[in-house]
Length: 238
Ligand SMILES: [Zn+2]
Image (tube, rainbow, N blue to C red; front, side, top):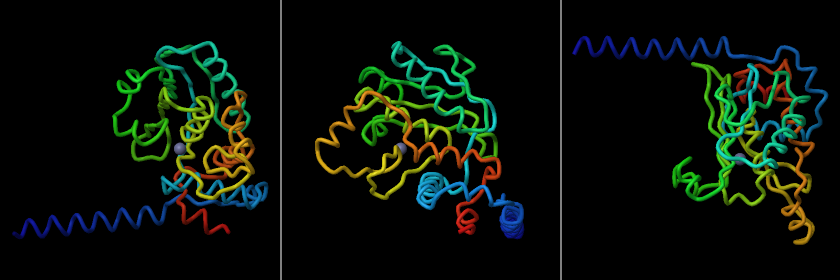
């Protein structure tokens, strides 16, 4: 009984110490001037998309090596080239596209082509929830992303838009915005003036990252925005 109570005390002391350590040494923004480059709506969208799921900043610090996995079309690889070209100027880490199925790939993209491929890649539960999924791998006890896998299921309506949506997640914008807006955004619901406008958006073949998502990615990769910054410490700035 005595040993049990000593063990409990040690555990409680360890928890208190860990909590005190994480409060004292949690990352902070030391010079917030860089945030002036961003508008109010851009900051709000960033807050929602960066902190909705994870409560602290996650991002890459090592070179991102993208590879398409499984069987993929010429169009798929052209789209991957475009994505790299669009994202490279926004982030402060290197990014490159490797040949398909490269072992060194740390951001692996699976554009699944059939029900059988979907079922082999993810669980039935995942397939029932969404059109795509992103999984992360983190450095030990860290918010540093060291690997990610994007799965776009075969029934995803707009494959390359879905891929870009998941790509935002894979870079570290893990959440979504709940605000309805007319402005184009990948990580939030969008308002349309008419059904025709909505159908034209859905059918649009040419895809790029909308401006709001680009700005959110850019803010996430600002050097002054530290890895592991907590939601509450970001909000303190405003
Ligand atoms: Zn999503």
